Amino acid sequence: MSRTYLNQFTPDFAVPEEIVKLVAAGKLEDTSWTNDICPSFCVPGNGGTRIWVDHPDPRERETRSPHRFVVALYDEIDSFLGTALATNRLSELLFYLRDHWAVAEDLPAPSDTVPA
Image 1 (cartoon, rainbow, N blue to C red):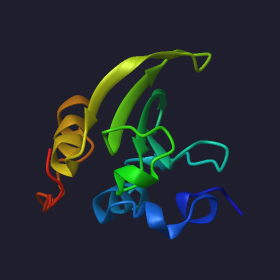
Image 2 (image 1 turned 90 degrees about the vertical axis):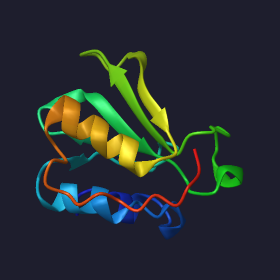
Image 3 (image 1 turned 135 degrees about the horizontal axis):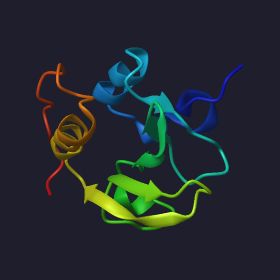
Image 4 (image 1 turned 45 degrees about the vertical axis):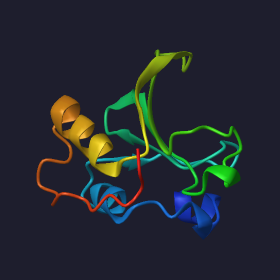
């Protein structure tokens, strides 16, 4: 059985349906691992860009991060280089993926209910 956010994390993380659809379409890979603090995804062929999807309730986040969605950049030996995007809005994440990786261009606009 391959690792996925479903078998590595509790359902409480509530990965948005838009991200699940991108994984099903092969536009994102699920790179989630139970030793990480939250589910993660990357663009196929670009493991250097990882999308972290933290718990929807900020009080439940292990790092107490104010942002639910983070796009982090890594080098070829997986050393952290920096953050490309940190937001609570799914729409901002999808726009970033569309604009930088042509990943989410065919998804309908998400209904963001989480304030910035």
